[in-house]
Image (cartoon, rainbow, N blue to C red; front, side, top):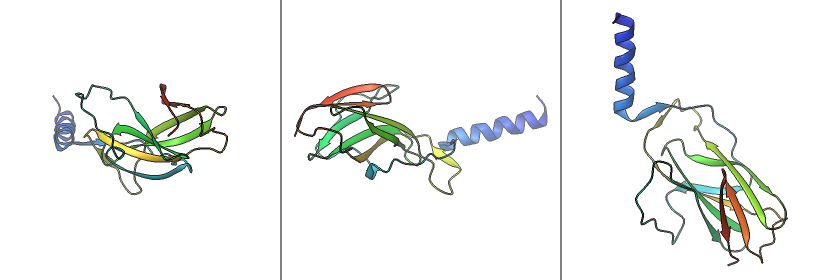
Length: 143
């Protein structure tokens, strides 16, 4: 093994053991996101063991907002970049990893981040809503 290959391997191992990984460029957060924070939505608890690819969680927050919980890096969370109504009973949410301004690496931990999303005016809040988050489809009953 050459010296440069050995040095490259040592740097890779050091980064992996420190829990830091490189991140992709940041993507703008949707204007529909009113807040986001680490953790689960109020009143929602996860009792099952985590799988390799945890599913998003969606919950009602009053009548005109929903919580969308995604899983990812604690320092570079998965946040909604697109929120759109597809008719009065369907909401589609796309998320991407968010790299905070000035950051160059993300921690390799896995945890929940909950975003509060203002429902588009097209959504009928008096009826059940189908919410699709990155391909996972969930149905919310009116609150």
